[in-house]
Length: 444
Image 1: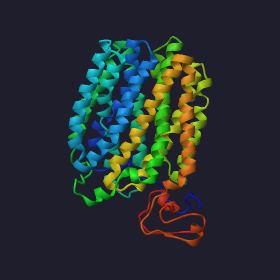
Image 2: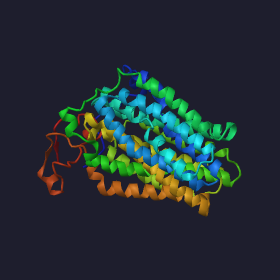
Image 3: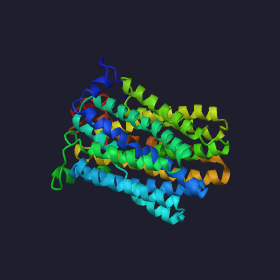
Image 4: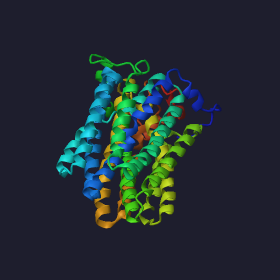
């Protein structure tokens, strides 16, 4: 079967039409500020703890505990949001996160032992507000079945990466120019203000499904095979983020120019953002599963050269290339969720993917920090390479699980002869593009 689309002549609606969706700007603007924890928290912890302890390994450990805690609790936050509504969950979460980050900052400045910092990192990570998944769930609720969903996924990736341009640069500037703790202080303040404003936008949130909903009892995001495959794939992307953060910081220290860290990471994130803009503007003729494989292939190849580069300009250029390869993979993965997961579990599904990124980031921060301490900054770049290679292998082996299960789809004898079943049918070209995928079709 080919995944190329040859019969559709109309182009996908663009960003202008997307932003004219009623109520969109009311949740996008405050949501941007509330997303800063994911962009600033890890790098802020690394810079502060490394300053107070003198060890990238210790800094990586504390940051890893934060990421693991977030990965564990994020899906639970998503389930609660699906059940009771986003605003009901966000308000206590935002207040808790601001207090937890403030406590972690104070302990670091008081030279608390490593175990105390790690303990304080648990509530700081567990309470990271899942604003990005909540915004995606709002788009999915308002654009149910619309071809604008691909554009929305691209827009969200651009927004995420713009925060990764602004967040690390801002945190690094504050930590190196104002005070080592200034990055985390700013993160807590932005979370509090943006999170409360976002929670106040109740009219645009998806309808809560309640404890007694039969649909809610039947559907669980983790029960969908494709979601489990995407979780593994997103672990690889998280490892790129974490490995780049620590390794670029160690590289900047190694060359005696700590301030260049924010610039290098900003270039890497800018590549991601630019690729995201392009992805949203293209009317793809290639199906999402193939795009996912191509994206991870490019990402693995780009990451393979990081460890061998010892020049800041060259490292910036290669980092830009790595960033350009991330956005297509992220956008396609989030787009597939809308096709694979019922509406009653989408926030949970998005938080599983976000949590996978955080968990991969946490593991990469720990491993890359240890490698950088022991063998130099270049060795830390081996972590993104290894993680993306594993993610690519997983996608190649389990790619059939990413096919949407359209109700009532008829599978021909020839398809069954090739091992296709009603549970894992081949996705037709229109289904892969997200148009008409709820209409029963015959697969040849």
